[in-house]
Length: 251
Image (cartoon, rainbow, N blue to C red):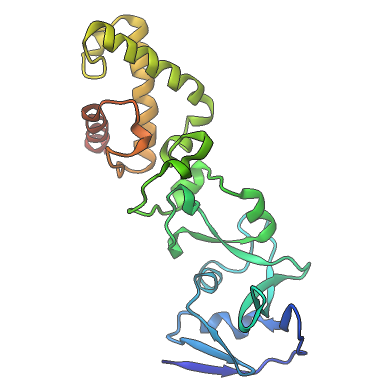
């Protein structure tokens, strides 16, 4: 185990913060340097935290508003002064955080490639939201399965919720799928697997719309979507496979 001892020139506080105004340059250069712990005035601090690694890799500026973390504070860990941690703070006294680009609850990986530096204000404002740009830049957890409790009231998977067209087209998607399903039951045919030119024009347009919608989802995840994912709910499994194969063959 590699331990480095450093001294800080700061007043000791019994509450909230143990030491303030610890320079960024005394901490971040030590991260990812095979140093397991540092001793700050005899307090042992792990350098393996994903938060410190995020600051070291992506810098101390908020990726949303640009606020800069200028100094560390050695602070209590949930009220436990025996296990303090280093918090990064800005000059205007806002704490900096690591943010999951794709939120964990939406399938985002707890990995450095899915992290960015963000101030606590912007992080709070972002909440459990995710943009198309976030999806491009973030990393998904390959083992993630969406449970009903995580879908909550929206009843949408991460793929469905954050596809390119979702905000505008979701109100049509459910209606169109219902119409196509009713046509399927009435005619005992599968319009998804038929030659689209053989379908009535109104059904053909709706099938084309649904196909376009899901191809956009597949595209943004580069085809890496299991056919069992709830993003595809309402579609025949065979058709799900066909759409994924169609995208992969067009790459």
